[in-house]
Amino acid sequence: MVSNSRNSYWETVASRLREGQNVFLAMVAEHTRHSPGTTGAKLLVAKNRDPVGTIGGGIMEYTLLKRAKDILETGSYTPEIQTLSHRKSGPEEKSGMICAGKQTNLYYLCRPEKDGESVERIVHLLHHNQSALLSIDPSGMAVQKQKSDVHELQIKLSQDDNNWLYEEQLQNFKRIAIIGGGHCSLALSRVMKHLGYDVFVFDTRANVSTVGENKYAHTVQIVDDYQDVAALIQYPELTQVVVMTTDVASDVRGLLGVIHQPFPFIGVMGSQAKIAEITRRLKSDGITEDQLSQLTVPVGIPMASNTPEEIAISVAAQILQKRDQLSN
Figure 1 (tube, rainbow, N blue to C red):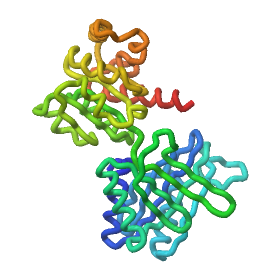
Figure 2 (figure 1 turned 180 degrees about the vertical axis):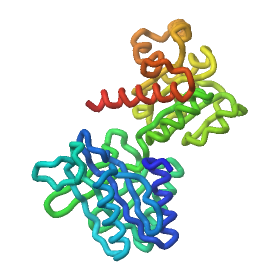
Figure 3 (figure 1 turned 135 degrees about the vertical axis):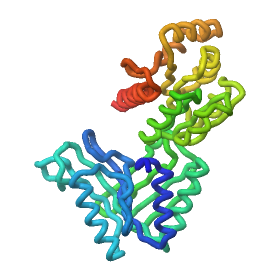
Figure 4 (figure 1 turned 120 degrees about the vertical axis):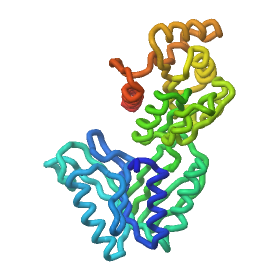
């Protein structure tokens, strides 16, 4: 199971609750640089089952797992937040780790009779790719369907001396659209899925084996024309795009659609000769130099990438680099 996949995490919580089990949830609500646990990371613990997910590992998580087992035995617990410092010195409560940074964790005991309906609602909304707002405070959990606002923080923790409130938009805003469904697309889908991205693949061919084999994509859509793909992508402001079709003409069709939209990253796979021909054709179709400058060509960090897996890793690494540059 991919530990940071929202869908699979909440499906596992729902499954345990249906069995009549209490489930201990841990979520990272905030973190600073170098913290091993990052905002949005999740862990769940149930009796006689292996833990699912992680909030950073190490002695911090080992200690929490022991505590979670005790809480599950008693069945009594009030939700709380805990800020832990990953340093030897300083006034803050220590995690036992020395990797620097700090993180604030939320702990919640999910009970079938109290929370089963809310968790089932989360699973339903995520399965239908609908946005929902999860709220947790000391009194319990609530879920409501809502229209996503891409300008709002996906996770927000508000607190004062007397109370706290954790809010999370459950729609995944880590998104990648891959135009082309071949071997490199399949490999990239696998890597990005394991990095927590929702993957959307588009191809014009329904009978290609790699299209049918792609179990990592959230959706695989067959289109008549690659230029139509741009209109099918939700949240363009948050979606990375990689174009890796079978030929120059198909790449150009895909690019003519996406280049006019506000995608933060548009990468194109290909040799220097292929990129030169794509550029020439785009110019002949009226694409300006400013628009061409938005493209990352060829996509991927420089390395001798020959296999689909190597190409996928180089592309994923570049997307993560761009993400970090934008966040700094």
